[in-house]
Image (cartoon, rainbow, N blue to C red; front, side, top):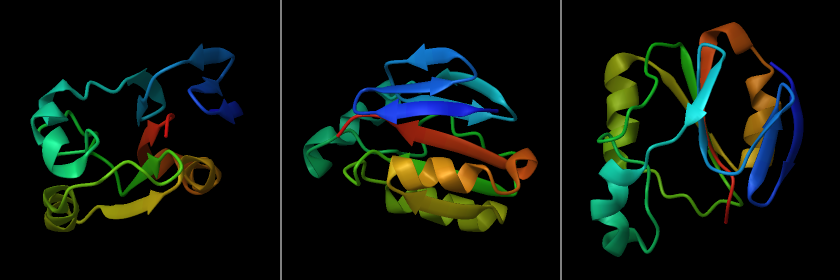
Length: 115
């Protein structure tokens, strides 16, 4: 998987530009469907990452890119990662992309591309 570019609002992976948050699950890229987390928006001032979303848990490590640091990750996500014995790495998206290159075959990701 090649990360070719990242800037506010878009990310380019393997020649395809995405203008929305993405989920990487065993090398497959799909749009993050954050609608299940919208119910928590008022509490956080931003739609957070919640366990209500389709999180790609089948991995040893889950990297969450938080944009510039603004994406809130709910405590329930952290607890679920611990319960599943999945290493959770939460970083600004630019740093998260760099970390994805380490042990890529054992790592899934959720990357926030705005804010």
